Length: 418
Image (cartoon, rainbow, N blue to C red; front, side, top):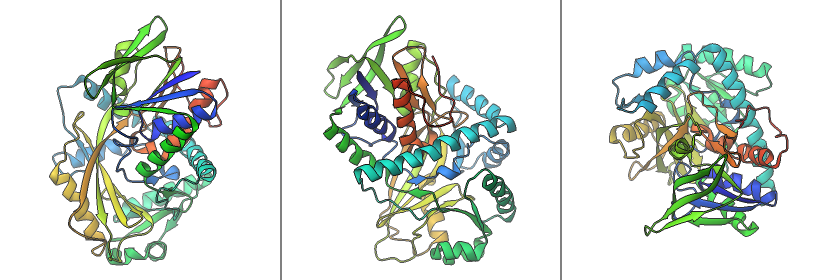
């Protein structure tokens, strides 16, 4: 079968890989000149399968209210005259109800853990190099009350088979000696040894090269403008070349993996997709000859940022800004990442220059991605992964290939249905 995958980020490329493995004739379309140049380009790097709980939880509304008015707040709503933003926000509040949070947590954890297994199998098969950091993920807490609540939650997760170790300060420092620099700030941590990290951009480009060698065709410099629907199926996609020429590409099946841009194309053909862009920021710091950069991937719960060692670079990422489709850099928010890093780790790396970046995370109100069939019989979704695109990409692609083939996916997940 001819399959057109729309989007060459980590989600689209992994889907293309598994579809090609099933023997399909796969073409990937992307407006960029290469794979992984948008949301997959400079994200936090964590493959946080055991920490896949959704943002939408009973504590979220109170926390958001606390941050109102702060330009450097970890979560910032810039209210716009955009009904989609308001509807998304209302739906997010609904997903904060305890019963919905429990359901969404199970969904996200199941897919994330499955995806981690798929990633490891894929890496064993291909030998892909991407600055993999297998040392686990340590969540650090600077607020004692927050740490106590997290310790209680970790106990419940262990009862469900999730390996979360509650770590007192001395244990945190044993796991990551660089934390000695901020010992007096620490209340404790939660460590998951089975989680890992790596450069999503390097992985995406390496997998795209292997997929191309397997026969996948990558058409870069093509912006997908319109989905063409007749009756209950798509007949093609209208694309615009970088030079301005228009081309229509037809296939037997289509996979929507365009992240935040997915709903803009789906709405005109009558397919709903509750995705809204949430802008995130990152700072990439050259470690150089400094010895104070952490080697274990960390999540700073107080500042809502992650710090991941990628070779001789330290990637610091976080913040969430609902401000539409702009990827403009906000200096205040960029500088907040660097400031927090050097407050905790004064000898982490070179303070200048620091490379800043922003990207649009395709978030659903529940944080559960949209994967599976639609009302168009030959249109499938693989989008809406929010902050967990790198974490869930391989599992999503593998499961979607199963759905398209009519097989039962190997993960307990509520897929979308026609």
